[in-house]
Every structure is written in structure tokens, then in C-alpha cells.
Image 1 (cartoon, rainbow, N blue to C red):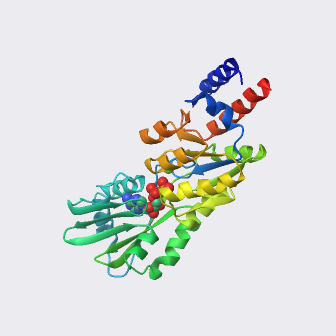
Image 2: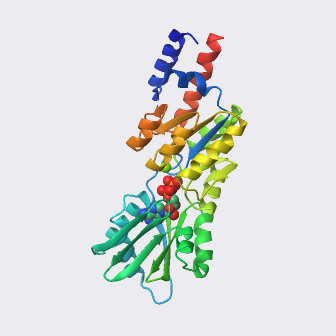
Image 3: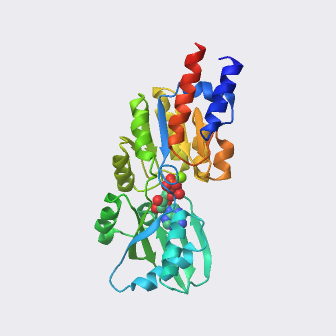
Length: 291
Ligand code: ADP
Ligand code: MG
């Protein structure tokens, strides 16, 4: 590649809202065989809303929501914000908490009004020895709808299941089908529940899905995809930074966290997944002109 053609390509990409932070990324992107997308905040809006809440016998809905929201008020996770907003909409007064603990990729815990409240993924309940059997069907229905199922335990007893919905971005489906149309493999990796990930993947036409992984699990997934050739990873979160670094090309959403942006080779300025397609096209055209 001549320096001039790379400069022209980089400039054209910038006009389309795609920032190549390294010149060699423009040249290497056209060698990529697999594009791996993070789900939350990358293919979805990343602003979930509480859609489901069902409590077990002996528990009162507003009481449970108030306790959970009190815990989540300490967390910065988008799911936490959805739960706090829902409690505020119902006019519930939150309490202060003691011993708040954020459990990365799983959920959160704290003591509220003398009661121990645990909220998060089914794997978190398993880890703490709390049986979810009574609510597994409710959670499965939430997941099948592409919404994220959460469980709540109060003083060690299963108290509720919660669903949050995070709609897919308007360009996501079209982007996936066009990337596939260009002969690329498209994959989804997420810390979210298996059923939720499968439902979203199906909606978008993605058939390679890795779910319920921690940040190091995203790296492991990328290493596996690399057996078929170079991999680009597209993500936005703090927990995506290891995967952005591990991929041959790291692509960050410009709307994402600073850590993600700093780790990436390419930044999509508007947080629009369609930017990936534009980046691939500019890369292919630039390299074709040269040879
Ligand atoms: P993603 O890969 O989608 O960005 P995360 O690793 O941030 O996911 O979280 C994975 C899962 O952990 C979430 O889907 C949720 O079940 C659970 N979780 C994480 N943080 C919280 C929280 N503050 N409250 C409830 N659940 C949480
Ligand atoms: Mg994300």
C-alpha cells in the first residue's frame, strides 16, 4: 500500500464517521475473516428498561423493587440504572445500603434495612447456593423474548425475577446481513444469559453465539475464532478492553467507555454498527486500488 492511498482511504473513512487510529489497521481490516460483536451497547442501544417483575409468595412487589433499587443505586451498570428508574417511576423511597459489593459480570449485593439483597444472573444465584427452580420458567420466558432475566434473593431466599429489555439498534440487522453478504463470518459474544443472546442473535441473523462469559471468556472466544483467520472485535464497555486488545483489529463504539476507545484501532464515531461495514468497504477498496 502506498502512503498516499492509505491517507486517502483514512480520510474517506473519517468522512463516514469511521476513525482509523492506525494506518496499518486500514490495510489489515480487509484480511479479517470473522467480525465478533459485543451485544450490549454495541448491537443494542445499551439503555435497558425494566419490563418484567414477578415476586414469590410472601413478597410484595414494591417492597422488593425498593430493596433491589437501593442496592442498584450504588452500581453503574446499565441494568442497575433501569431498576433504579423503575423504582423512581413508582415513587419508591430508596434506603441507604451497607456492604455494597459489585460482582463483575454477575450482579451486586448489599445490606438494606437489615436485609441481605442479592441481584443478578442465574449463575450468581448458583454460586451462592440459591435454588432458582421456582422461577426458572418465568426467567426462560423473559430470555426467549430477547430480554435479560435477573433473579433477586433476600436473606438467602429467592424473592423475584426481573426482566429488562434493551432494543437492538436500527442498523444492526442490515449491517449483519451485509457483512455476511461480503463473505464474512459474524459472531456475538456477551455476558448476558444464553436464551437472551440466542433470541437477539436470531433476530439479527447471527449464528455464532457465545453467551454467559466474563471478560476473559470474550478473549478466549476470539482466540478460537482466530483459527479461521484474522478477527475484528467490536465493543464498547470497560469489560470489552481485553477483547479489543486480543483481536487483530479492535473496533470501539465512539459512544463507549474511554478504556474501550483507547484500546481500539478503529473508532465508530456515532456508535453506529453500520460503521463496521463502511470500514470494511473502505479497507477493501483502498487495497484493491493499490494492487
Ligand atoms: P455484557 O457482556 O452484556 O456487557 P456484563 O458482563 O456487564 O454483560 O454483565 C453480564 C450479566 O451480569 C448481565 O446480563 C446481568 O445478568 C449480570 N449483571 C451484571 N451487573 C449487574 C447488576 N448491577 N445488576 C444486575 N445484574 C447484573
Ligand atoms: Mg457492551
